[in-house]
Image 1 (cartoon, rainbow, N blue to C red):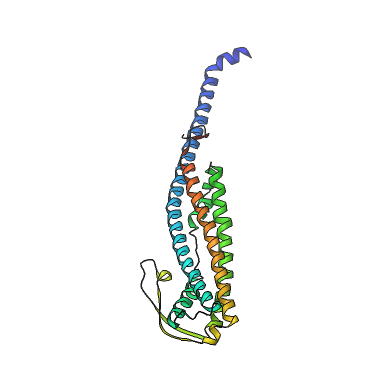
Image 2 (spheres, one colour; image 1 turned 45 degrees about the vertical axis):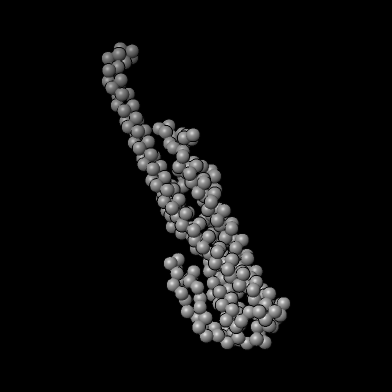
Length: 253
């Protein structure tokens, strides 16, 4: 047996060498594939950072618009409750237009890149727990809540506008805006204000509720902006980390 082993040791060593070469080849190939996947994931994260910047700009624009709508509601409520009669019919029409036509403007996120991260399996390569949580919280939690809140607001605005339009008639035109039509100023071109209805509790109740919904959405926008802010910070944390050949996670700092 020993003699047989000695006679064939050359071939045994050659076989072991071939096996080791194959294993090393598989190992190197797996590293290459894993690194390629990690690079692809990082490119998606960089693209996501651009989207985050755009999302936060959109949120800021909508927030500014909603603050104007809240101010319009405040002016109407003060004029009615204080019986000041300081607002002209044109000013009343301008405030009603702004509140009813722009108060329900909502934020809609660009979630396609997040979906690509999930569907390509790139999320499994994410090493930052903070980044993974921020992604899920933003796209699976807050954006879903945003859609739900937006539907509630849209429904009430639609019903309130139907009631108001029976008593207060306003025709308008939009001034062009570089930011898009939803941010364009609305200019009354014709209006008829039923003053008895304007001073009624029915109208006041609708305006007060519209204001409350605007404030509720401003709170939603604050939560969204904070979430995107954290997502941006944690995306940097993810990009500042890298893979080494042992597949261990290493912080570049």
